[in-house]
Image (cartoon, rainbow, N blue to C red; front, side, top):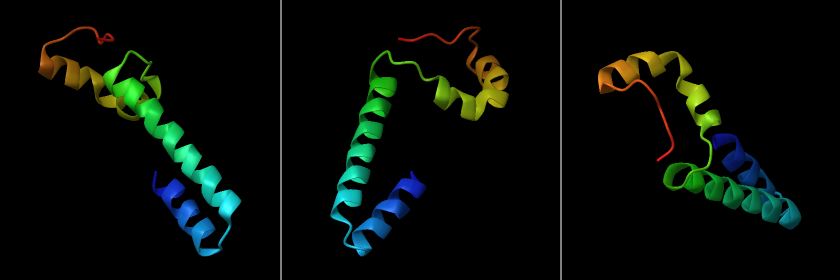
Length: 70
């Protein structure tokens, strides 16, 4: 997200309206995908990959054996 924000600021500072619009659309698409993952049933594999090494500890602490979509 930090990279997207930085690229958007660069495009905006350079008065690159096409680039700014493209990056805004990318941000909106990203937000929509995150919403589907967080509140829907879209796969969250890319998010879980960030904490893959911690999943066994998290599952044990939570007392669960399997992660499933709600």
